Amino acid sequence: METVARVAFVYVFLAVAFRVLGKRELSSLSPFELVTLMLIPEIVSQALVREASLANALAGVSTLLVLVFLTSILTHLSPRASKVIDGTPTVLVANGRILEEACNRQRIQPEEIVSEMHKSGLAHLSQVRWAILEADGDLTIIPEQGQPLPVARPRARDV
Picture 1 (tube, rainbow, N blue to C red):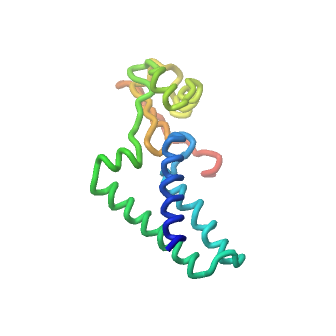
Picture 2 (tube, rainbow, N blue to C red):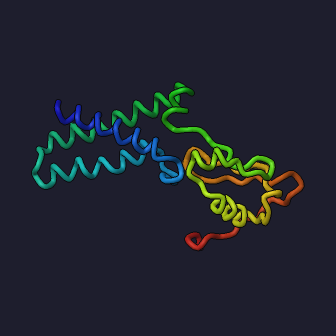
Picture 3 (cartoon, one colour):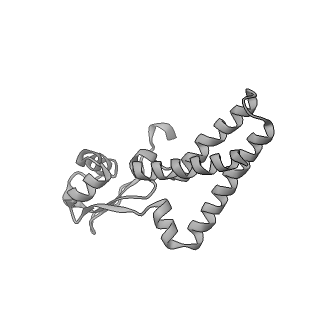
């Protein structure tokens, strides 16, 4: 039972820590997905090197998977819980103007926004209606009306 309590505590602690860390650092993983990916190998490795019994490892992994399942149900059923756990998008540029306070809060440099604009085929901030930092850390650029939508270019890893 101690293993179950320890895993639950570490799960919540790491999820909160990664949520506070910020969107951009997590890229496309939610804090809870990242915690899960970190904890499963750690729990299983203890049983493999005989520091803990196999039963304890299975109890730990089972606890972790139940917590992940319960978290997904909670975020599905409660918009408020989803907002707290998954986060919300943040507008960084509105009508061609960088919102410095939002950028500072999310620790995003204007150069990062400009880089994403260029990837979207836009040369000037005046061409950007919205730049939104999504909850998963992706930066979405929405051009002003009348601006041509960029054609998707293959990325190096897609080729």
